[in-house]
Length: 442
Image 1 (tube, helix red, strand yellow):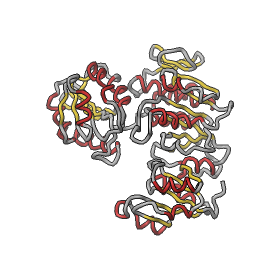
Image 2 (cartoon, rainbow, N blue to C red):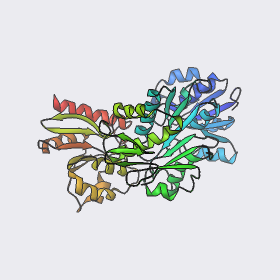
Image 3 (cartoon, rainbow, N blue to C red):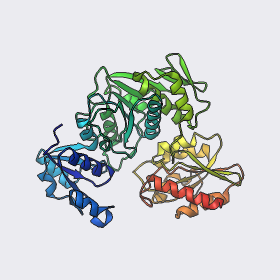
Image 4 (cartoon, rainbow, N blue to C red):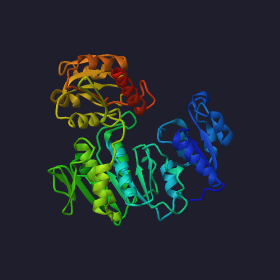
């Protein structure tokens, strides 16, 4: 892709926007950064202004003076300036697409998407590849912009990408050598017109693959099976319940007759077994020694905010699952423990149907505590079906769950919602939970 002398309009001054602007400038292009937020709400705005052409407080017609527009993942395509851009046939791409177009051909791509489990899966893939001696980089929705790496230079063997539906919306030439779709469950319905539209974005990950590339699907997920005709590549399946290309049986993962033990892994729950299977399939084209794979499974450290053990106080265990931002994540969390627990639910909603949690809460929850902006929605869904307490304050809801607890109880933060009602992101929510728990311990 030619960059030198080309004018790029970049919507959004978050991590990906700033990263791609820096890469464009490095390669001789002319970046223009635009953000809807006012200047005082942008970190390091003065430094950004000194480095790039900018505008704050709204996306103006100045964007249309550029040759190509690059959209940050959080920018919805329905905003007015983008509708104007479409009328002018202005080229619009994502940071992922741009990065793909400038990368060295020899660098292979393993891309993973899904409603749940993406970050754990790509992190394990990256861990295995690093242990095997590959120069592998980890990027995408996990928080590291792909454009921040020297993609245009030789030396990177494998790029491991976590991709959200937002990042997959503007895929054109992008192609993954290995593409995996872990699962599809209702999510982000406040952005898409329907679940079908959301699912279609997920399947963009298979765009441009050929018969020489590998597509990985979850055999147990009815939605991935339903849409598998879109992924008409070399397809391999993983399953917890059926003997597919890779499957789970008696605490072993089995592929081509070889067994990998899960006895020593720190990953908890059936959903994480699926993540491990997907990871093993994803690295299968790269001839990694089985002993390295087993050692990597044994030594992998689970990511924070995903069924993360925090502490034990007076015989009560606390788990932080702040990354559980949809109902399916909560189902996984509830099924990962062998005893009923006290669960804290609530946050900023995404138009999900919370009633789907009722059978899981009846079977797996000792008591339910509602908090956050979704209190009314959740209460309306649960009333008359399950008992729950309503406590608006985040610290108070944790303290109430603890005061209700007996020795041997488990308290789980697994919100089924995003964090934007009170926190900047799920990490801040999870860290606040951990701080409050440690305060109780002190």
